[in-house]
Length: 283
Image (cartoon, rainbow, N blue to C red):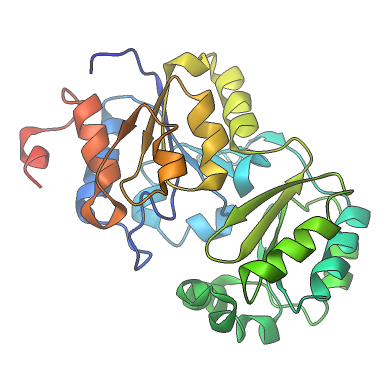
């Protein structure tokens, strides 16, 4: 697998994180080894910065963030914004109203915050998002009125997520949102991710590559879900996790082990054997 790879782009949920939303010591060690070898790594995730910072053992090893599904690209060390694309308040409010017709839980990602109303956090489990409830309770800003929050933070609306009771409700809202300037992607069991039109993980990756002077052909990307597909298609080398749906696995250059068996770490070991000490290879 000798290829010239100058940048690594890694998804978090379902890729670096296992089903318990934990990252293994072995994966952290491989990322540390790559950092010490001078190989730049970017988190390419649907999360905002606040949601990545609960994993300090991860963020300390990763210098760049392609956050909110490509809407915000950040130097994680300096805090410098490399690129940013926001949803307008008018569009966000229209989407909020449409999703409200199906009893959706809205979740907003801004430059510095993960935002969900306290009453809605209590409904996450029934909306197929129970695995995230502890994180939401710990870190989310909890306004009383999401619409009012949107009106007062209109310059930082990077991403809107909607969590539904089932896929049918999601489909109905997706149809209602068709005329809005939004990029819509399915996630989890019955979730819908919304970014500004034309914004996805591949556009964020392209912005970071332009900033670093690295061609996309020299990027290794690893992911598992629909919002990773643009990134996997754009990268010169793509790896799908073993837990990824078949429609994702068939689009990737390679398939690795699943996220509960350190699949991302295994792929990185194989592509960068000279950067990983021998003791790491046996984990």
